[in-house]
Image (cartoon, rainbow, N blue to C red; front, top):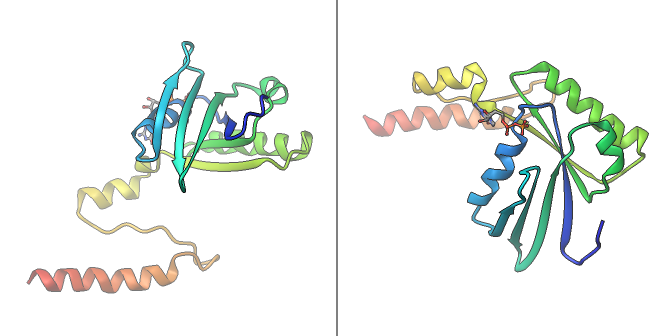
Length: 161
Ligand code: GDP
């Protein structure tokens, strides 16, 4: 791990097929991006990001298994799972346990729940022109937003008449 100022290593964790490579490839379309390059083997990608007037370089490394996890030093972990596949949730949890419990690391971990487009309700909402929202009543998450959202939808229809 070189410690050049503003240069960071990011370890990508997640079961095969959850979208790790697709996500890093997509980063090149970000409005924050300055420069991006794929290394030859496609398992790493380097991107320069401008944020709050400062440029940093992030090097993404695909961490393929537990052995590699223990051998690779990074500044942060991105743990990707696929919302339509329970096994990828278990894989992600296993990796998070490994980092926090086995490696005793308190490095930043960002959990990414990918492929939300494949959740069927969302597709139905799109097909039938409905508004779609996710809530947890137990956590009181997005419940206020739901109330306001209901009224907004009614007003939108009213405006059309
Ligand atoms: P990796 O093995 O984790 O690097 O996964 P990939 O990036 O190779 O992606 C595996 C497959 O999932 C590819 O066919 C991608 O096009 C597809 N994929 C990635 N992200 C999404 C997503 O958000 N939605 C859908 N529907 N497909 C995705």
